[in-house]
Length: 174
Image 1 (cartoon, rainbow, N blue to C red):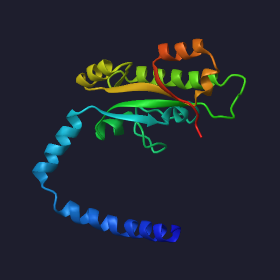
Image 2: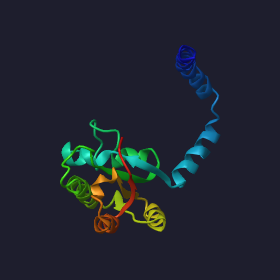
Image 3: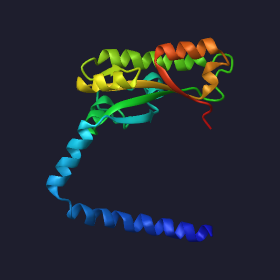
């Protein structure tokens, strides 16, 4: 059965680009503009950007277009993203004594860069915050933690992460 699925997958890869080209030829320009307006008026929320690690360790500055990442505030605005969760990542095998440190450093880096570009983005902590930031024409940035190991089994750390703006935690990474 797997060879058949692989063959079907390859056929789709070959045929879909052709279908896309034909679909683009038939796009009604007025309808396309209406769809773009709806998209840009809506609050589009991307729930997972792995960007904080690149910001902290790779020197990524999200306030400028960068060739080191597909994510920056400029492209987010161009793509109509209104809000995004930046995921602070704690690898399973990193610093087993204190995995929260790397996550806290990533959270700090996100805050520093958002504060550096107040005309482009603001931190958000709720749905109402997202809506208000969107009304002001800025990007709403939220925080998540990828890998619950950063909590280190401590409800106090969990509450502190919540106070810092973390709004989700995945239980594990892989």
